[in-house]
Structure formats: structure tokens, C-alpha cells
Image (cartoon, rainbow, N blue to C red; front, side, top):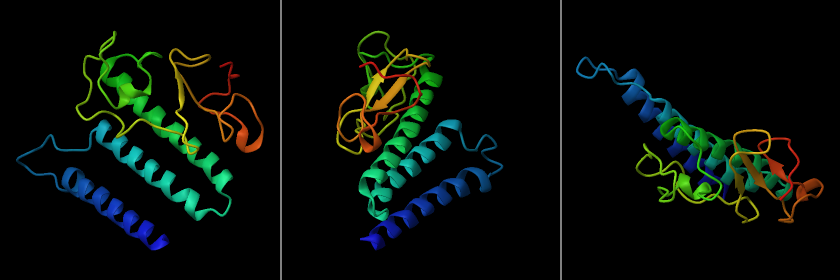
Amino acid sequence: MIESFGKGAISMRKLYLAVLRKRVVGHSKRHPESGVTLIEMMVVLVIIALVAAMIVPNVIGRPNEARVAVAKTDIRAISSALELYRLDNRTYPTTSQGLGALVRRPTSPPEPSNWVQGGYLPEDPTDPWGNAYLYRSPGTTSNFDLISLGADGAIGGDGVDADIANTSAPIDG
């Protein structure tokens, strides 16, 4: 099982190196504008985070603690995708548009002006326990709240049942 992860990591490394060779090292006189864009770099970081999120639970012997670590990694990756969305469209998705706006172009107002073809995430994100992440914009103490309700799927809790969020603000449902 670990061998398959090793092969996946190698192919991710090959992909990353190919992008770097083509864009950074392989500058040509014909294409002086070649280089790594912010979006390309963020996409690579999101892919790395998603691969790490798949590997961590199988490598660590404590699956519940590993799921907490994966949820924290997911929240950082989703937050990066939300920031890319904001950079392109000058606003975050609304609460009603939800995280689906990172996968499918929203059709409800405010419709994004520069939504990237293919989206900002490959699929609707779910936490390591199979529950949807809670998303609110504007957030309680920041531009948005992004929350996993933990192993129990309910607000509050301790240990692996504790809520995991992008901020330390209290979660009121």
C-alpha cells in the first residue's frame, strides 16, 4: 500500500519538476513572458496539500489524530483556493454560493467576473469524516469562516470531536 503512495509522490514530483523546467528554467528567447504565475503556483500547492491529505491517515497509526491533521491541511488548501477566487473576482463567494463556487461557476448574484475555467478545486470538499465543511462569508472575525465539525459532526466537542476552523472565533452554528 505504501508503495503506491510512493509512486504517486514520484509522479507528483515529476509533474512539479516538468512545470518548473518548462516555465522557470526553460525560458526561451521566443517567449520572454514565460514564468510561473501565482495561480499556477497556488494550484501546485493545493495539489500537494491534497496528496498529503490522502497519505497522512494511512501513514500515521492513530487515524483520528491523522484526520484532525488532514482537516487542518484541507482548511489551509481551501482557504488558498478562496483567496485565488477573491483575487480573480474581487470578492469571496457568498454564504449561499458556498464552497461549490470553487468547483462550479456560480449562477446566483454576485456572479463572478473572472471565474477560472475548470474551477479552483477539483470537487466539492468534504472533511476527513465525510461531512461538508461549513462556510460563511463574511466570517465572524475574518473575511470568511471555514469549519469542520470534527469526528462527531456536531458543534463543540473535545479531542477529535472538537471543531476545526480557520479562525479561533467561537462557532455558533
